[in-house]
Length: 569
Image (cartoon, rainbow, N blue to C red):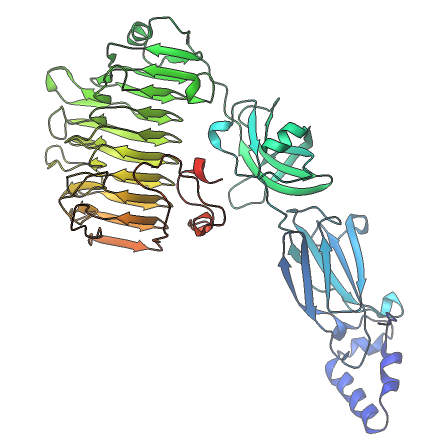
């Protein structure tokens, strides 16, 4: 198409006779007097209208309505791009394109992907002073290709991070750049980007460890193929852990832990540690942490972690915890001298693998009813498996007044009979608030055996239960037959349940006459957006990687995968 620019001189000769008269009349009605007081004034009625944007992987498409009075005209338009929405300085204009259609496309080799830009458009004329006004600017941002996997939090240290991607040909570099971001604001980049070359071995493995990062710092990360970004994400490095005690294989770990002072942070060098006696934390809280991010580097064969009396608490991190070798009945057992009330410090289990326990991961029913208190119990980025079937729940919360129990980004399979029990009749003292139990981004497979209410039995105790973005599959365990079709019992007058964006597969009572598991009404009930997508898992499955292309890859509340992130890719 001819890209010649048009003004009134070009348009009016196309009409004759009555057409000229009507065209002139229309122009006078449509325009302000000032436009004709100054023959070189801007032609406002020709300003492009209704700009719209479609952001794609490798481009952004901008379109608009044709300028008024140009239906018989081969008009052209100019589109300009800037990071400044006001276009105050001409030197800030990054890109200018002229087009003879009512649209323009900006490509990833012309502007940066995921960078926010603004575009404005005007209708051209023979001279600039007769061109239309610029349209009101609108923003766009090229989405970019995504081969980069979400950065897995346990793979990030204070100064290093493991970056992984879906193996694809042509990847060349990883680039990171610091940023800050206030709530509800765009990220602000800091300093210059840092580039790391990808070797052929790393490209084939789809993984690279980047180094020399700053502690406690947010980074954007981009995966490049040449000059084109083919993946993006972000992560935050951890603070540097200041260990107060360092332990190596062969040392007496039980004695070191039991004699450590309150607040000790004990670092374990890689190796195998055997603890044939109880770890006894008597009125103190400590951290026991492997010095690498790989739990299998640092194994403890344990009997029990006993938390005794007010102030006792523990953080377990980066550890493989083997309960089978010594014959552990509990991972964590709350006790008190003479069975007296006790106010325990928090319990946190992060990036650990725990297995081979005979009875329960957490027992809290040895004190008087309501006599034990704890603010928070949490499991994050961990995996628990192969617990014996017993009358105790995996989390036996009876008689403990707590504020929050949080299970996130973790996997649980072949564990105990009942998942959680919390049914003591609290009266004196009564809980100050309704406790919250959250299960988020977890994978739960093969639980339940003979008892009722496999997920949680809270009876008439008030509980706020949230289960979201998770997968629960294959209830009950092999040869199990449940006592009830109800998945839970939450009969407290102020209890509530939110159960959303989960996949619930093959949940039955078991036995010869297996019945589907049901979801009973609760005082406050919000059960929606759940799925029953078939999986090829059974009770013996230990690898829960989501199938490529599965609907579960986009089933979460945020549009991403559900279940434990370790199985997303």
